[in-house]
Length: 83
Image 1 (tube, rainbow, N blue to C red):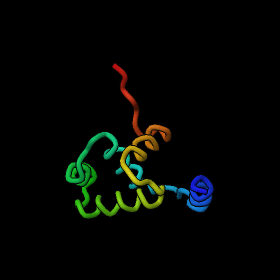
Image 2: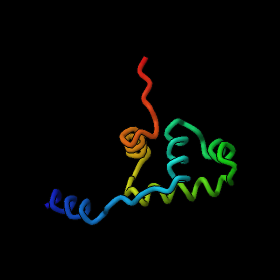
Image 3: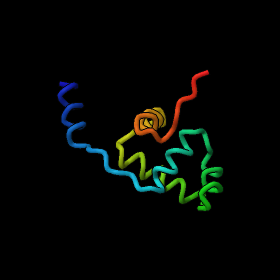
Image 4: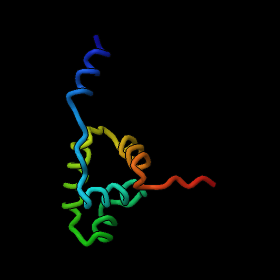
């Protein structure tokens, strides 16, 4: 029953495309920048960064940053450095 419920939810929730600005925010966030640093880098308000982050998580139906990091790697928005 639980698996059927997850399947129904995953089919109903379809990720939407991110805007260019949202992709920029994803890149910086997944590189470890704090909201204030992202705001300074992009020349926007911290509140705007917070709004972008919330919109990104909602659009992609993610619950945590780990999912966002995996997405960013898969989409080539960030690179993994292996020592």
